Length: 594
Ligand code: SAT
Ligand code: MN
Image 1 (cartoon, rainbow, N blue to C red):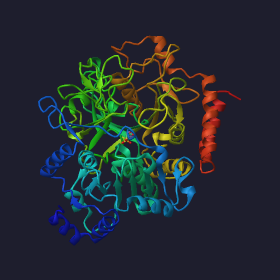
Image 2: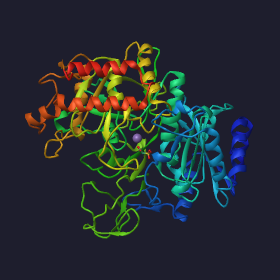
Image 3: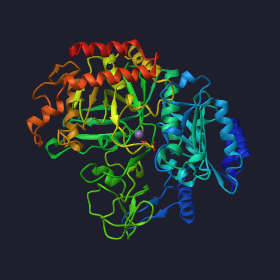
Image 4: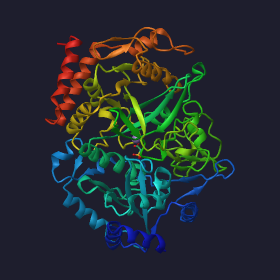
């Protein structure tokens, strides 16, 4: 059932779009083509169809109104990094940290798979805007997909529908995304990016970042490429506003690898001893940042919803998230209770009897398998978030006062430190390391280098990316201060030294105080550290020893760390700017390691 009205309008106004869609229809041969308009009627119709097709299970309409559960194929539960490729004509442009395939080869292989792949299926044309409507930051993407689950998620994650066609007008500047789940076989799964064509072709997966092409594919991999070309930054960062009791709000952008608590931090609820403080969410995953006419760095969240990790989300870790997933949310791979509510590990409530695990199998508390998949997710509209920033739709974005890089490190990295200057800040970001999480397929708990949390998301050569970051300094008359944090340091018994969650606001406050010249600090060999008493610890339950340990800079640990950093830079090769080696050797000298 092609919606002829929308089709006619688009064909009349944008022949680039209608021609491309016609070509892709010719290739994939769907039974029908549906142009999505983003309306409420359409949303309801698609939910109904998805339920009828058993793609979604409607949840209890009294306790979870407007909510659905999706169970993905068990072979398709996370991003597939080893099947994700950057397809640039020149291999060096992708660099050694990306999988690379020649564009001709990638197109040829995928064309073979896509040929007739939508026979018997519907092709949905999903137009969307990344960034606030009418914002100079905004970009249009069109995703063609045969997955109704993808369409419904895109409707939450982006500003989707006619609004995007209007924004596009007659321009050919849009991301061309082609997606087909095929038969969901890992042997026929590839996620290929063609930055020079502003295109993404994704086959064989229906999950998250593999299939919602607006997210990691366009808003990070392709956008980072565009950002380098055009002088801006597309980053794996949350954006939050921290409001003090006096009403002053400062904006922070912070990079953490997937599943390290970005969503929690972006909508943090302050502890009772921080009365009058508030955190407002601008974004929880991705930031697009440009230099404003005032020489400051300005940021928007390109997305309109959250694709957050469910396990561990509780009234303690993230009360705002618990509120926002009460309605209009699509859950993926969580457990279901007998009365069709949701449950996951770390939800803060006992698992009720008779629940079903993420694959729909009866599950008992003594099972050695989790009920919810560790990478199970909620997709929820940002307007559900009680802590949503009133400036989230602001076309100019928000001015960034501080950039924070955070890893998940059991040792070495202190709770917080400030960089000596911009170049040292870029170095801190470039050398970030983190223990791996469930968001990517692979082992949990092994430290891997994850520069700026962009290792899986940078669409070009990592060394060139570092150079682009260093080069931003000349464009920034008032650069944000740069910090590094680590909430995850452990003591010898393996217990976390810092309580984390809402208490992290103490570190954010110190950061903002530093920006405003209000907090004391002293230089250490690896960065600027809080002066004694400058971190607000009123009402927190932490011993002096634990705090000291959380802050400790241990030369023996750093000796190992600096060697590993050097090894990583050597792997990236000669594109790594010499400036970053200079930074490392200065640290080595400061630590008197040689
Ligand atoms: O890439 S996903 O959107 O599937 C989630 C993540 O890795 O952060
Ligand atoms: Mn992410």
